[in-house]
View 1 (cartoon, rainbow, N blue to C red):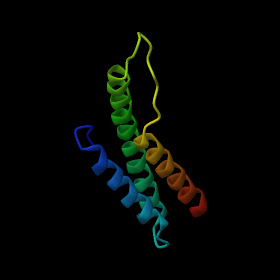
View 2 (view 1 turned 180 degrees about the horizontal axis):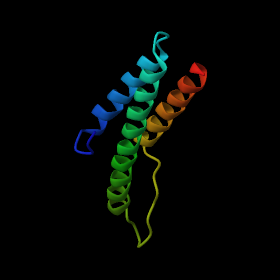
View 3 (view 1 turned 90 degrees about the horizontal axis):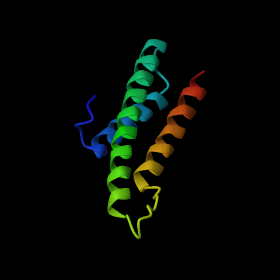
View 4 (view 1 turned 45 degrees about the horizontal axis):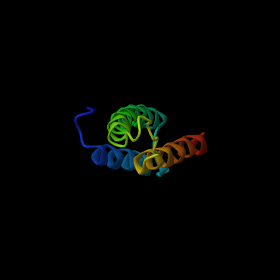
Length: 92
């Protein structure tokens, strides 16, 4: 899993993992493997978002002050994280 992949592809892969975890016929080993993959994808997503935030903050610089934005990408990532954790908790 590389940060070189487009952010949207990583989110799509994360959504696929969530959907697979929601299926009811997974072994514990498969669930753990999917969880590990999902956590790796979340880390890469956060790295993408951090870089984007830095670029946006630089572009929005006005009057020697920086404006902070909460981007849509971060909201999507938080939504996926909540779903991901919910699925893991319901499987226990």
